[in-house]
Picture 1 (cartoon, helix red, strand yellow):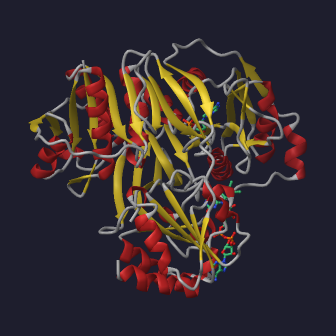
Picture 2 (cartoon, rainbow over the protein chains, first blue to last red):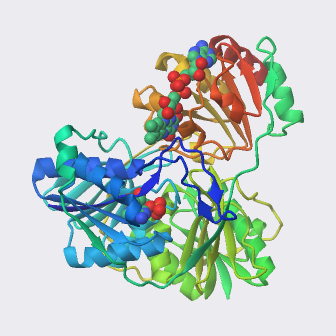
Length: 245
Length: 320
Ligand SMILES: Cc1cc2nc3c(=O)[nH]c(=O)nc-3n(C[C@H](O)[C@H](O)[C@H](O)COP(=O)(O)OP(=O)(O)OC[C@H]3O[C@@H](n4cnc5c(N)ncnc54)[C@H](O)[C@@H]3O)c2cc1C
Ligand SMILES: Nc1ncnc2c1ncn2[C@@H]1O[C@H](COP(=O)(O)O)[C@@H](O)[C@H]1O
């Protein structure tokens, strides 16, 4: 089975977010970059499927050269090879077009992604790619088993779960608890250095959206403390002051 | 030209987030001087559909195809694209939800439309078409300009109020052609908590963390939620340990909620938990540790033992 896993290079979940250049650029100072947490679930499941069924796992990232440490980490975790599309990931539709261009020539059985990126939070790329390829997409997938040509999945819905089936090829947006994150071992880290990482130039696409400027939410006011001996005071304040009851 | 808005239902009724999307759509239509059409797919009661008119739409297209009784991502995208073409829609508005998230990208491709998910405000149409959305999991916002002829937007929950303006809608049956290939995803089983208030939809959420010590102590969380008409949520370790079901897990890797009131009990306030709650209007934190980071993100706080404070709150809630 030939699996493609699309990964993002995103600020660590504990990062403080700020912007520079008059609020048009993300401030990378002091920020640690990681594989998107949902993408890492996708990668972990891909490796498990490969271990069980054979085949290959390729990771793909649309990003500039500074994302390579994150791609190498995915190789250390167990992907066989990697593709970096050499471009700033300007928006979901641009990213999807790049993935589609690769997928059209490579004919993957399974394309796994995260349910959403934790920087743009679009939740779009999987559906965009699948629609362009004319194949099914399922998200958010919390369980994925492959039986022959059939993918059996559990998908989270509001207030519950839905079990779905579809034949391969297929695109899935993954989330926990689809697999356990894998910690790269020494051998993985060593071998990652020499695994193939192909750099591909982007294909041109029509631009449909432009990100104009960023802003931070307004600062939170001070927290009003209520004495533990009179918690009923809380409801008074919620009713008359905050007006949320 | 017109504006199309998608109506999502739950058990035959229109979801609150759909009414918010309708108000959003009619407000935008007013600005642009065009009409709004709603599209509902699947089973709805007749009164539910005509009552959408109270929120300002004159026409509702109802797709009654039996095969669409359950949400089928590919077929729903086709039906919506057909409705958009029929109505010559310039903007398609959808309420953000787990089902819509999976539909909207496919719809955008079909319409060659620019797409923005989770808009938090009405578009600025004073020069171009700009929408604000939250990014970095609620830690920031960005303004996005859509330059395509057709635009697709999902509206974040609780970001725009549903407002009744009077009127009633005419319901028209709409039967778009849907290719067989759209049914390649088969739903084999659905497990859904019925009768409960859905967490992503709730106006009030009562959430518990590891500070509650074990699943046997959730009785008081559920009781407080019931008294307040709230949904229950939890932190990630709580669902990881199976104290609560996974769909209640709130945060960066779980459900993102934006209720009017979020009450966090025995949750420390790790940044990944806050990422799921920071668009709540009002946050109350109950924690025995005055240094718990959650207090920094809270509007109201009680430093105290949950096992003493919550029973008192339940008593007080009964008198509300
Ligand atoms: C990539 C990543 C993603 C993550 N995503 C999420 C996510 O989506 N959601 C999430 O919640 N977490 C997430 N986490 C985990 C997060 O970092 C925290 O570990 C978690 O939120 C802690 O849960 P907690 O507050 O319930 O437990 P704890 O941190 O153990 O806090 C328990 C709190 O209860 C208080 N307490 C104890 N006893 C009492 C009592 N009797 N009365 C009142 N208070 C009491 C304590 O003072 C403490 O503050 C993620 C972590 C990572 C690395
Ligand atoms: N720049 C990128 N490179 C590779 N994959 C990406 C990129 N951006 C997004 N993806 C994939 O698409 C998923 C959804 O992203 P998004 O639509 O931005 O929320 C992510 O979880 C990744 O799997």
